[in-house]
Length: 374
Image 1 (cartoon, rainbow, N blue to C red):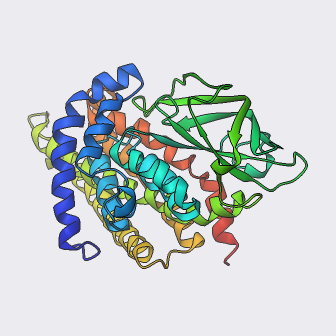
Image 2 (image 1 turned 135 degrees about the horizontal axis):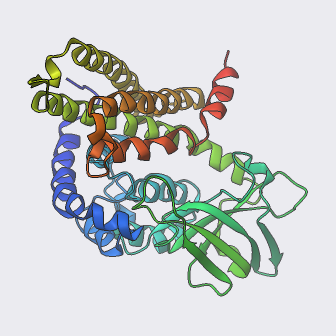
């Protein structure tokens, strides 16, 4: 029994699962071929309150907590629908606006984000800088009551569908300080590159963004000037815990599918499950998945109590992503040649999971963060 969730969380889970099974799962192959999820699915999710769960009700959200967020993350991971960019939109972009936005900004953007009408992205990554955010080159120059934004961003989740970009910029190219500026997609000088082809998460619309003398009113600045790096790092513990939550749910779902597969699949006249090696491999996965689940739920509980630290968030991401890669590889092996076929969820999940050790900060960066607390 998992004690981290309340009854209202489980009721929300039932609603989320019904929606995902009926509106998302049947269409995943088509969306993966297209490289993008149609915007109408966002509006459908928004209509029944599945987006922006933690946004207060006065701004159109559900007024929930991180437990409701975790439910949606888990249910998407359970069916390997992590390419659907709801989590970035609801759990990263919207919380920035709630935490640092003005009242006018909250009223202007959050209700449309909660309804699925407006899709948000966080534009941090740039070509050639990797995890070193302080080296970014995108600039914002003050011009009267406006900022003029110039630069380029890459690897942007939801980039193809994006309507609002929280964009990390520098006011002084020589400084390491960052300033967050919200840019709407209809502003002259803003453009999107083609959708990037990836080895996994093929249904996720990942793209480059270009800013060519984009004029943005100062009212679109999020928070204070030169405080962007502090804002970004303040949210990272939860963002990294999300990756751990997703990993634990993925492992559990694929373990259950692999157990059933090995019971049904016959080799040398008997089920694959009946071979001792199979049972031992599954036992190892079960033991490690259970260990990860206990830790991840503890991290989620800390987040719900606002006790989650940067070090613990980094541990959650490091252990979750590394174990996901290792254990999904073991489960794929038990499928034999079928595990290498895209029609089987284990193969797609195995490929999709690889990026978990990269985005949100690489495993090496997580180790550096954890080592600072030694």
